[in-house]
Structure formats: C-alpha cells, structure tokens
Length: 504
Image 1 (cartoon, rainbow, N blue to C red):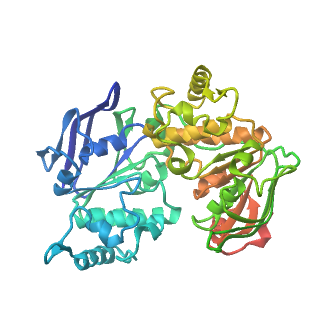
Image 2 (cartoon, rainbow, N blue to C red):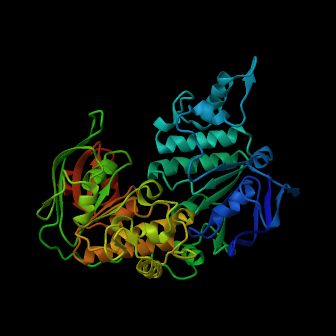
Image 3 (cartoon, one colour):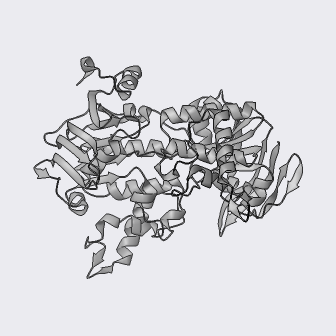
C-alpha cells in the first residue's frame, strides 16, 4: 500500500509541531523518518494514526484521500502502529491484549479467547516468535512485549506499519532481532515507517531516509550516507560523534563497594557478592545484557533496594542503611534508567522538576513557601545552560520530548555539589545532538574529580565513556577490564565467559 502525506501541519497553540510536511512511503519499503527528539516525528505519525487531527494537509492511501477521526479509522484502513511506550494492559494476557478493541464473541456474548489464542500462535509462528498466548504481559521482558505490539498490529491486517522509536527500550540483541522482523515484513509487501534518531540502525535497515528538523522536512538521504552527514542534517550543524577525554587524573577515596548482595522482597538474590572501587576522576562503565543485576546494583547505591547486605562507602560515609534522601544529601547525583517513572513528575513544571531533590534548600524554599523568583531564575539559567527545548520554566515536564526530559534530569542532578554521579542508561531514547551534550557533561563531571558510574546496555556508549568496564552476568561482576578491551571479548564476557587474562 502506498502512503502519501501532503502538506501536513499540526499546531499546539503557538508551537508548530509539523510545518507543511510532505512524505511518500512506497509499497514494500522501509522508510526511515530521522530527526532529533522534539523534531515532530511522533506528532506526524500520531496525525497519521488518527490520534491527532491535522490543522492542514491530507493523508492518501493508494492515492485515495482519507479522513481519520480516530485510531479505529486508521486501523480499519490498514495502518498499524507500534508505539514507543507500549499500549498494553499489564494484567491482561497476550491473547486478551491482542483482541482488545476487536473482541470476537461466541454464544451469548462470551469472549472467544480460543480464537484469539489461535491467531496469536499463527502470527507468532510466521515470525518465529516464542510467545505463550496465555502469558500475562506484565510478566514478559520488554523485547517480548514489543512483539506482542507487533502481533496486535498484524492481527488487524496492517498494510502500513509505523514503528515509533522501537529500539528505545531494547537491548542490542533485541534490536538486531527487530531489524530482521522489519526486513521480513518489507519482503512480504508491508510498507514500514521507521521513526528513529539512531544513525546506525537507520543506515542498516532503511531503504530511504527523510530527515525532519524543527517540524520541517529538511532533506532526504541515502542509507549510504555517513553518520556525520546524517547527524548534520538532523541537528543543523556538525556533530562530534566521538567522545573526547584526556587520561584520568585519579584522586584518593571515592566509592568502595564490598561484598554487596541485593535480594528481592521474596528473598531471591539479584546481586551476588559484588565488589569494586571507583576513584575520584574516573568513569566506571557497567556493561551487560539488560536483566543481569545492573538495575538492582544502581538501586542499592542510591538506597532504593529494600534488602541489602554488604558495604557501600563514599569516602568515610557508609551509604547502606541511609534513606534515599540521606544518600542524595551525601552528594550522590542519580539519573534513573526510566526518566518517566523515576526521574520526573510529568505534571510538575520544568522549574519544579529542577529542584525535586532540593525542596528543603533555603535558596528555593523558606518557611514552607517556594521563592518563585529564585526558582524561575534558576530554571531559566539551567534551561539555557543545558539547551532544554521548552516554551518556558512553567511548561509541564511531561509534555517535553524524551531528549529534553532527560536534559531536565541531567541538569537537576549536575547542578549540585557532587561526591558521586550515577547514571543509568543516560542516553536511552535520546537523539544524537543530545547524546553529544550529555556525554560531554559526564566527562566534565569526571574531570572535576567526581567518581562516575555509568550503566548502559549500549556497548558503544560504555566503551566511549568508561576508563574501566565492569561486566555483569547473572548478578555478579564477571570481570573488570580496561576500556580499550576488544568488543568480541566484551561480548563473550556479557554472555558469561570470564577472561581473567584481561582483568584489571
């Protein structure tokens, strides 16, 4: 099916999110829509999917004009969408989620779950998915949940399939599997719109590339274009794609973790006997496939884990047993891996989010009253310093693009006097321009003599930022190696094979 968008314009008050955008997606091609967070990519696809109504412009399918009043109309016309944040009900089974909104019944109105299960198995077998139709979605790994979203779209006979930042929450292995699925769909004749800001992925899988910047189409590119050329189109300037840093100047003290064990409330051990040091002035990168204890390790450091054994010392301060507030007050800056759930209060303004961990600071609060002038001045300075794209300090943080939400979190955590900085997935779902900015800030923090821990499933990010790399596997650190350790050795370590000859 051929998809054509002509002159699509969408405004939100004075903000023009889409400015007369033209786009043609041919039958059986993967067309990448590339741009920074906040460029207008997702807004454009939400117009296509009927979630938003365009102020101007036209949608055509096989040259026939369409008027979608909602997602139901778009789905009926053959458009499916796999959202960045999955539209699934966690307590429902896979089959129940797939049939939701398109329920088949039998008898006197009873749901025909057997038919839904068969349908799930048919689509899963077609793509080699290993999915139990009766599995509860909330119990499934993120990569499998995304496959459920794909099954939902295909079960409604989608001829045009939109993937909105589909790899933002996937491991590298899951990303490779998704690319193979997209190629298979294309080869079967499905038209695919692939929204992304990741240059490697778009060059690997796209047939054609359209670049959007600040709500406008700024050009088309070939997948053979270099990363530098694509990055320049995206952000309108040359982008430094290499992290530049000098040799570390190490201080004394820092973070010392000894014999750390983290247990779930049910008593299962998720971090088992972990020990390491991070000196002032160095970055320790923690690598590993998602789910091998990295999340729980970070939660233990910042006081979020409920059952901890062992010691976590920052200089002369023991952190185990302290509250989260006590740990933050000890000088720990923390960027959580899920900014929406743990890093921001979406309904609060940008300014309010910038002082979430400073609500008792007399610079901003006195006698229980917020000093509005001081807060606004501080917020405007941080917005300018960290290039946060927002209409102003009073804009709700939840309305910002993912990259700008991450900048709010980074700005808040780096605007305090720090003795330790911990960043989990610091650039997940962030565009190339923002990645460059965040990486520079992390290196500056390290160069200021602060010990830094960076946890990332992006191996390129870990090797670029780290001075040493700790590889986690099944709750243990299988080895700590220099940052220039070859990728093939790191990959083997991530799969559980120790390499003591390169341990440092």
